Amino acid sequence: MEEQMQSNFNFDSHSSTNQDLTIVFTPDESVKHYSYSLFNENELIDSNIIEKNEPVSIELTETGIYQIKINTYDAENKKNVIESGIYEIDKEAPIIELSNEVLKFRAGEEFSLKDGVKAYDSQDGDLLDKITTNIAELDLNETGIKKLIYKVEDNAGNITTKSLILNVIKNNTSTLIFFQIGLIFIIIGTIFGVLSYRKNSKLEEKIRKYSLEPIEDTSLSLFDKYYESYTHALKVISKSIQKSVFLKRYSKRYEKYVGIFGDISRTGIDFVSAKIIMSCLFVVVTIFSSTIQLRVTSLYEIIFPFLVGFFSPDILYIAKYKVHRKHIENDLLQAIIIMNNAFKSGRSITQAIDLVGAELDGAIAKEFRKMSSELSFGLSVDVVFERFAERIELEEVNYLTASLSILNRTGGNIIKVFSSIEESLFSKKKLWLELESLTSSSKLIMYVLFCVPIAFVIFVSVINPDYFLPFIESPIGIILLIIIILLYVFYIICVRKIMKVRM
Image: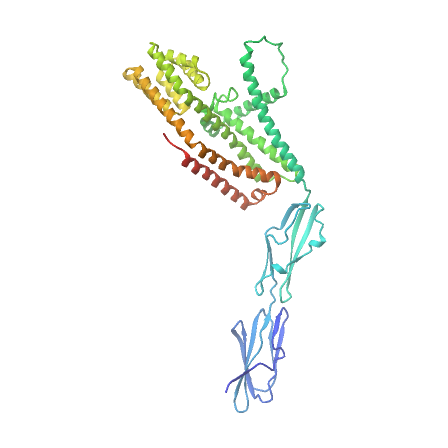
């Protein structure tokens, strides 16, 4: 008969330890011979037969969970089974992982000890709650390099330590907030100043012919000096980048903006030069901001503002061009009516174009005056209107150009054709105005949804300038930032496609 009992061991069981164990089994006097089996995590690793009634010592030196089973036999060869307790030896030190070896933060800011910290052991599992530090010995209100030591001990007594370098810098948050607010006011003031200057210049042009000429003042105002420096820089950069084939090709897409922005930018190269100047200003502001915070500007912090500054003028260009096209689109019907009336009175196409340029104001008048100048230089009517259609990119202008081209080649009743065009444009404009009134509320909601994320980012950045820093100070943050921007752009494109109504 087989019996089980647990005795005759110098240790019945043992808690986890990092020391070597010597397990001694002492058989009873009735035992004639016996055998033992040693298991590590239920796997047999050693066995032996003892032919005498004498104690046996079993050495446990490696990491593992051990158990010993003894089979004893008396004089009648009766078998007894004796099982030891569980002996756990853990000589492997726990592991501490830190997401950063160096952490930089401002003096006085709250610091979470366990953010980005992992502690675990192969035997005991997660040990994050058992971590201790020397944070009480560190003064985080004082700037300088501090050494934060993490320490963890497992159940077996194995100890691991790991150090984190803390770079405590001066807290300039309040100064930076005032600087950013001041910078915003400066930018807004500059914009209002430019707009006021343009308004006053236009007013001066209107009343100049009704007033006496003042005494000539050759001195330049501060704004005029800045303007002169800007135009000089524009000329120098334009002259330099003209040698680049890539930039020359890239500038061709800006040729259609020439004339819309006054006399500053006369070629596509000038628009590219203005973009370069804007990107350099963004980089200077970024470096200045970093200098106030007493830190070195990283490469990512230079590249990102440079790209933002380079492409941000495109928003102004596109918006101004759309306004220009909108004015022409609104006034085109009046131009067609004037041309049709001119044809009814027996005038030619050239005379009709001159009449539109003289009778109307604004963008449409400038375009017709430009066409009149091109006709005076010997270009044909077809070529002049084709160039006009390329500049404006309006369906109505393409229709008008095609009609005039056909009339010039085949002949026909120009008055009847223009009356048809006039009626078609009038009906389309009426339908468009009705559509605008029906979709105005939806468009307002769309624009609000576009602006809310940007306004939220600006508001949070003013309150807490460091809130979005992880997006530009770590590689994963930069990747996430790019994904966010792409998703936002995709969102805008999708909403605009849905809201756009084609006629």
